[in-house]
Image (tube, rainbow, N blue to C red; front, side):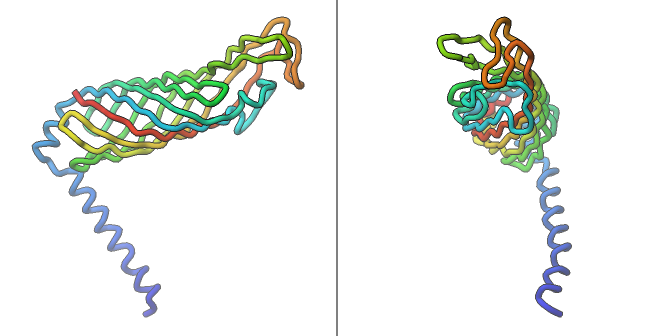
Length: 217
């Protein structure tokens, strides 16, 4: 029997052993776990880094300024909601500054958590409203106030660690898809083949990484 064949034969039992170990940790009913299940509300604050490309996937008559299409910078977030054992549901607001423009979001936030004593890996999904800030378009001596808003859908993965009975510290990464619409601007004409007097659309992408502090009440 070759070493490769031996490894293949051992892979499945090893995977089953790891799975059973994780499951046994997940169902361990310690006093801390019981106490934590009685904390049904959460409040969290986060900070990190964000990269966004507003036209990553498609663009149709959106904006003429390249500076308003992609950038990176600081990301801030806050959320609150209720927790029902392995599940949470609540609201989340995020604000990201990317050079010459900002991206804000208000979303319905859902997550599934795996309680493993003092750590909790989680998967999350969000959907809601997004808007572009500081997105004015300039042409010579003229400047146009641009309204850009639309739909945000994001998915994320991360882990939280218990520091105190009420305090958890964690980190996570989110991938966000943005479907934005620029509202038409009256008497603005065209700039760089973009007709500002007609609506414009884009489908973009944002990647966020952040550390987060959560209070469970």
